[in-house]
Length: 167
Image (tube, rainbow, N blue to C red; front, side, top):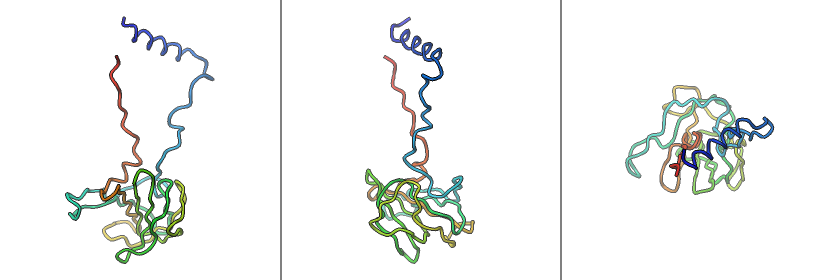
């Protein structure tokens, strides 16, 4: 048996036989960086569809099913950079670290530009009337890094596990 493999097996056996008090907390107990912008289960009515080029057709966000009057939550810590009307619809935009910006619409904002928000804190109330949504209320949740639109639901998925070869 290779020495590295023998060491790994020994560590596994010792770890399995160690008293329960020595077992580390599971990774699931770690605080997530991002949360869904609506309470409850994430129900998507219309997925993100990247445009083929900057001005091309696409769906630059995900439409999440909600109820008019529901609280809209900041997906992560950040600074509100805009809270107002865009093309006749009320929008809230938040800048986050690493050049990311999330947008939420149609939302009656409870925050203003310059406000610092924390992950899960309310930023407004979901309004009815999002076109193309079959539900009474839908939140259009967008994500950008610079000029590039990204799928906001990727923020809620666990990161991919990458295993390195055993030497």
